[in-house]
Length: 198
Length: 326
Image 1 (cartoon, rainbow over the protein chains, first blue to last red):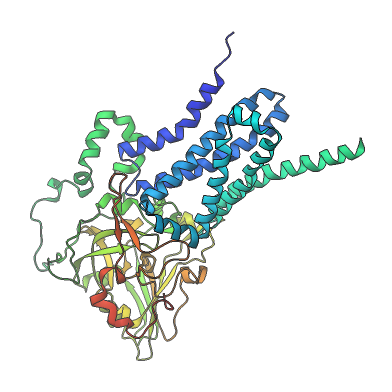
Image 2: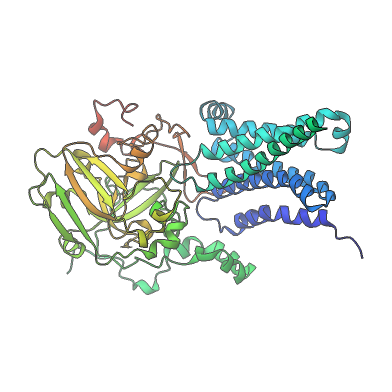
C-alpha cells in the first residue's frame, strides 16, 4: 500500500483557516468590520498553531510514532505565517504603515509590545528552520529554538492584556499553554532525578 | 393619531430594504457562487427577527446641526448585526443571534430618587405623550470604530420633566434590564461585569437637547440587539454611555457608580467624552474605522473632539480638565 502523503494533507488542513478567512473577505460575509475579524482570526490561529507545534513532542513520546516529528517544521512555519499576517494587517489597517505611529503604539501599549516581541522571537525561529541552518548551528540550534517558550508566554500576555470584561478565551489558551509548559518542566525534573540515580 | 407629515407615501412592501439595497453587489456575487455560500454565512443576509415596526415621526431636516449630518449612513444590516450588548455575549454578532430571547413587551420604566413625583411608566403611555423625531448621529465606540445612525426618539428632558426633578438633583443614573434567564451573557462564568449594567450623566448633560431616548432606527422600532424598546443616545460620548433597554432612571445628588468605570477606572471615565487627545491606556483614540470598513477601503478617519459636536456641548465642560475628567 502506498503511504499517504501526510505532509500534503497537513498542508491543506493548515491552509484551511486562511482560505476560510480569504473567502469571507471575497464574499463580503465577515460583517461591517472585516479587518477586525481577520485580525482576530489570524491572531487566534497563530496561537493555536503555536500550541499545536508544542504538542508534537508529547505526542511523539506517547504515541510511539517518532516519525511525526517530521511535521513540526510545517506547523511552526504556519504559525509564523499567521502571526506575520496578523502583524502586517495591524501595520496596514491600524497604523497605515506610518513609522512614527507604529513606534508610538509599540512604546506606549504594552500588549502591542509583547505581541511584537513574540513575533520577533518567532522570526528568529522561522529564519533558522531549514535543515541547513539546523546542521550549521548544531547544539545552538536547540538552544535557540527554546525561544518558542518565551514566545508562548508573550503571546498569552498579549491576549490577557486585551481582556475587557470576559476572560474566558484567555483563560482557555493559558490553561493549555500551562499544561504544555508544565509537562516540559516535569520531564526535566524526572530526567535529573534519573541522572542522579544512575 | 395624525402627527405632522408622514413620509414616504410609497407602501412599505414596495421599498427595497436598506440592507438589501446597500448589499446588492454582494448579493449578486453570493447568487453567482451558489446558495450554499449564502447559507454558510448564516444570518448575514436576513433581517433582524425583532423590532422593525414602522414608526410615526418627524424626519431629520438637512441643515439642522442637532439632527442631521451629510455623512453616509451605516447600512441597517450592519447596525443590527454589529453590536456591543454584553448581556447577550461579548462577540459582535452575539446580540443579533441571542437578543430575541429578551421579552420587551410589556415594558415599563421606573423613575425615582430626587424627583417630586416618582413612579412607574408603561412604555405605551410614555410613547402616546411624546413627539418622535429622527436624529442622524455619529456613534463613536471606545473601541475606535464608528457608525452614522438615523435614530428615532425624543429628547430625554421630555421624560425627566414629567417626574419633576428636585432642585438638589445633580446626576441621572440609568439601569438596563437584568434577566438572567433571557440574557445568556449574564450567565457566563468568566464575565466580570456586576450586572445590571449601569450608566450615568450629569443632569445638565442629560438635559442637553442632543441627548436622546431612542425607540427606533431607520424609521422602525428598535431590534432587541440595539437596545429595544428604549435606549439612551449621547452622541458626543463613547458608545458605552448610551445605555440600552432601560428599566430604571434615578435622579441623584451624588455622582453614581457606572459599570465600565467601576470595572477599570483608569480606562473608562464617568464622562467618557470622545476626545482624540486622551488615549485609552491600551489603544489610541486619534483615529476611528467608520463602518462599514473593508480591506480596500479601511475608512480610517481622524476622530473629532466631542465626536464633532463641540459647538453644541463644549460649554458644558468649560472649566474642566478633560485629561483628568475623561
